[in-house]
Amino acid sequence: MLMDISSEMIHGLLPVYLAVGLGASMLTIGIIEGVAEATAAIVKIFSGVLSDYIQKRKLLVSIGYGMAAFTKPIFPLAPVIEWIVAARFIDRIGKGIRGAPRDALIADITPKAQHGAAYGLRQSMDTVGAFVGPFLAIICMAFSGNDFGLVFWIAVIPAFAAFALVHFGVQEPVRAQTGTTLPDAPIQWREFGKFSGAYWAVVAVGSALTLARFSEAFLILRAQELGLALALAPLVLVVMNIVYSASAYPIGRFSDGRNRLHLIAAGLVVLIAGDLLMAYSDNLLVLALGVILWGLHMGFTQGLLSALIADTAPKHLRGTGFGLFNLITGVMMLAASIIAGALWQGFGASVTFYAGAGFATLSLLGLALLRGAKA
View (cartoon, rainbow, N blue to C red):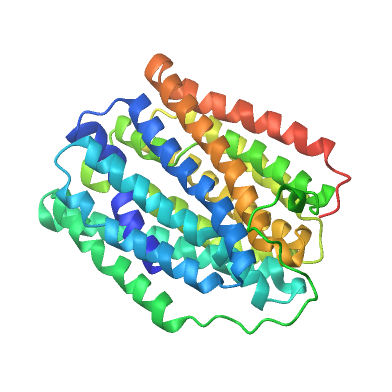
């Protein structure tokens, strides 16, 4: 939660800072956001596999949080866009290193019957940080006279607090002997053959859904286009993440013992409605309704996808399973963000969100083909 507060204090302002302060185009912003998330995803496959191999998930989680913390001071010091790109790149590497081992660690210490609740709670805690961070950014911008640098410096504090908490406060769980022999090398292609058809169905669903949902940076830029004051730009993430946080845990808990794919389908319907509202909106009130629906869609889908991965991946390969899932969905996020940036720059904001609704509709149709898959 603390790292999310730090990251969202920066990321809630970063799209506007890039566009207004550094003169970046929409396509450039889309590429930066897409490459950042794809980098995190690519690293996750290696960190997930490595955590299975060395059976030391906390070590990798701690390294990942440390990298993220030590890159935060680069943002207020950056004089040109290249520094921002470098900081985002290193920060996302840190996220990639910690992501899959952290999710696998949750599965290691949680009974399977409570996976939905556990990942819903994790998602809610992450999202509490994700709306507290932008809210603090708004307050700091108001009191500092829109001083981006000062806000970025303040964001350094919770980042190092998160690193310290993980490094000194989290313990590696004692592992029972499973009788599974570890391979000679951490990555072996034959290991991928141990994943079931149900696992690959979840990966397919997550990939299609991610292609339909580009970076939240475009929500912030859309709000600014419709007249939201510069200092209030992070308010978009505050609203979205309040809804996300409030819905993720109850939906995750409700999904335990039920077919989670049905709830993900409901989340896609909500995403379609949100995209259409943001494409159609000509004022901030309509846009706010669209942002609320985006947050609800996240609550319906993100924690449930993690729970499905935990349910369907072999226990001794959970880190690999989460890493592989994040790799593929990260590539989809890269494609989605670049497409969104190009459409915005070439045809305008409305076309970007209409396209998002179209991709979500195709994803919903694809999900219908997997209706018989066991959740």
